[in-house]
Image (cartoon, rainbow, N blue to C red):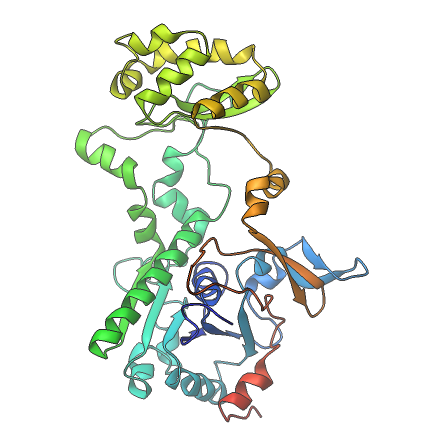
Length: 395
């Protein structure tokens, strides 16, 4: 596989989403990612269906869509880490690897002799990333965690969902496992930063990454809004807390997301709606004024949008450079001509499914183009191949 990390080997001991997402990011960049799974069972997400990939005859395979979304580009081997034989093989692979990813409960891999200190003894340059719900230290270090509970505990659900007093009001989780995904991204950034530092110093490193820490970190503007004002952020539906107008507006034939980002765009919007005077009104002329006077501006906009065609209004706004979009379904996303032009959806050969669709990496390098050659592997598909490469045997 080509790519800027084609010289890097990753030993992926993780499962479910956060760790595997990091491994897939690295695999897409060209790294040789060896995924270690439990014999006969594999990654938990293999069974997280339906839906399951269908074979060419239409019959479901054992490959769940959830698993297929986070394991592209990897090689799968099966090892029993409870047994000395499996532990020996992991140490042998780690000795010739650059990065280790793991998300076991605190202390588990130490019992197996596969913790950072143990693997550092066989490979002093190893970069080892431990992903847990709450980190290696603190009063909750031993507690289990899942994305949903961390969205709640980390405050994300308190600022996500329709505002009180509106139909459907209440806390809401994000539609994808965003904490897992962001944790995986931080893990990928962290190990690559450690790899860059190792190139300068010759030293490996250990990274302790907690999902709750990640969630607090990407509260971002909502956290800072509270820190500088003392006002607790609240659910605002689709309304942006700091920029207006940014919201979802019902039109005569559907919904439109409007994302005005500056005063010039607002002036163009006002002109298209036949109210050029709004951009000169001191209540609406600047973004801070529009935020303060949202209660006045919002019903004016809704009255104008309600009687207009979404298609015609979107065309006029786009021509004027005012950001807006229909709210696409997932199938509509991949029917978008822009996304098709960017080739974000590919099909890869699959051993049992014939072909498997994959939403690929959005990174486009000019001098180290990415290639997507390996479909998410079957359980243990590459065990014999990898053991031969390392001169190992499995009894």
